[in-house]
Image (cartoon, rainbow, N blue to C red; front, side):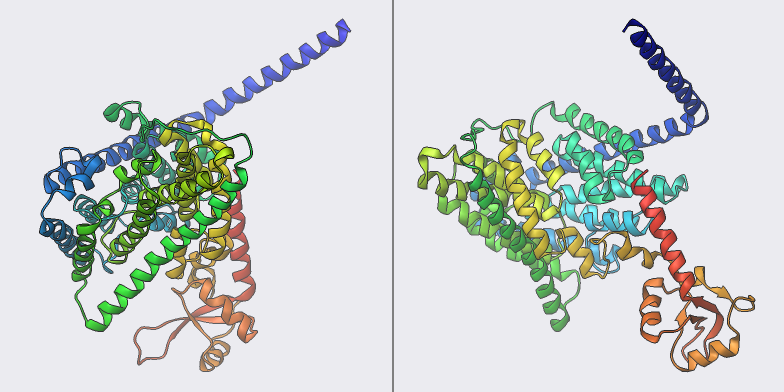
Length: 562
């Protein structure tokens, strides 16, 4: 027995020595570059944290000046004391300035947001638009400062992505590094916004990068912690919501009720998302048919928002005060239902009018109101087996937000870190699982992915759905004159049949032609002008396109599993 123990100890010692030798070799040969990359991630995390901090503090300062509020956390209370015409005019004037900014600095008058960050990660090597991004951040800043009914997290995420894009361009980062740095920026922005380092890191992985690769985990965690430190230096180590009635789950008897709540929250999330898309389509239809200038669209949305706020000032801004009232059970049943309906309408008006902002905070508020309304009914019907109705508000807050974002893991953790109460975990997880399972079937996985899908950018199904759009026909073709390429006469014969593709087109456009025409190759052309014949550059072979597609999928899989 002693000999066996001694042999085992010697074996373990040998394994430890081998591991130390391997670690030292990696440190010598790869350590310096890895340390340098982590240092860049740390700097991006600090920059993203400061961006979130200054964005939040700027909104607070401007809101206090515009509305004359002593404490903007209780903005709607101060708005109730204003003359009705100020409540109407402030969002309208804010929308006017926003419209002018977007008209002059964006080609389409559209605010950039989290969906564009996801697109940048998938299709642009971790880059986003810089000029349009800065204009969008300013537009969202003014929208939120003048009563826009959206959230500040989406604009901050895109602003942090602009910072990482600038860094990636300066160091000429490849796609893998650019995406990792983008994830670092997003993690820092989210963690600084919510004082939630765990959820910030997981949000970047789950929503933006859409994988949990080991190589991305360490730098993203570093950046997320840096963003949290920036937040805590300014606001202290406190939770976002300071609650006094956490509630307790009555053993396991209430779990079926949370399953029902999750189903209801999934439907509410779908209503919220479709309301935004419907409002955007309706506003676009009215704008096109009345030939209204682009800058007038946010102005009209602001005026309509102000008109609603005259009777329901709870819809103004992020909605912190109303969310706290819901989570502490300080609202009546009819108030919770009515506020949820009008908040949904206000978010749809704000975002459909292209005023800017995000959907995270509104989803939290609507979820808390939905959960409270359900809890008030459930606890009154079965008082003997029910906990407090505020527990349902917690679960509803997470369930609606998770379904809207398509992020059940990070949203569940955000609810924990926002409240500092880990006892509600079981209820939140049950409700979140049901809401995301239902909502993801009724929309294209999430609000952001549905936004992209409406722009014909299909990221929801994974790399196999969008990598073809990344590969240009000119990069895969066989040039004219190559012994393996078809002759110019054979190419011209196909062109006469209307079978050709321009060099700048993607394989996404070429593959349906191959399937439809059942041909081995397509002539690749360039058109100098509409009247002249196209110039033949070469031929794109079906087999070459399939090989390029396979290589792209293999590279994406290698990145996700590295």
